[in-house]
Image (cartoon, rainbow, N blue to C red; front, top):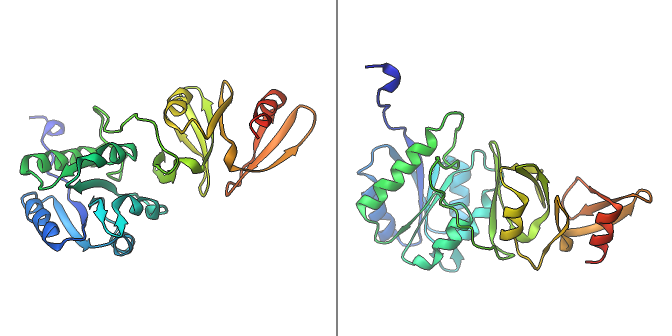
Length: 264
């Protein structure tokens, strides 16, 4: 047999469990014990301790509950900014109604309680495929195949997953300031981080981002006027627009600025 075709041993995956109920963490832990490639490196019962645990242990996957009063599992996502590599997230909850929102933030998977062994095995296999992709070092990059991500329109407070190579962050849709077309790619400026080049079209973002916030001012530009901090005319033909918490200004043509000005 060609060695290149031989089956590789499972990759060890470091995981943490986040759930406010110890009995449910124990149940999931027992299920995961049937998968020796998953090594649990810690557990947390609230968002604060989960954020600290992620920083301390750098897991590759977080099995995350949604309802943890007074917190919500989605509240953990913005606190993961700056973690590199970013861990994958598998939501584990008794409520199916959170599935669309989970997929909108590019969750690796979504499990309902009580977790069925066969369904968990599918999730573990998906994590293995994601980690085995050439040139990837983290499970936050999903494996090829049918996308998990919902294409439903986003609300202003929904978290958007932005990835450019190994740089990956979550940001609220309302904090995205500019989406600029670059052929089959788009360049995104969002508050609190560097520009991100994504492999998606401007039409994709125009359909998904909140219509009440974003306006198309040219064939290649979507702008969120609520994020504008200052406008500076360079000359008759060019204007610079500065946005909150974004170092790089956007230079607009005369026509683009005229259309933008009508929105202000």
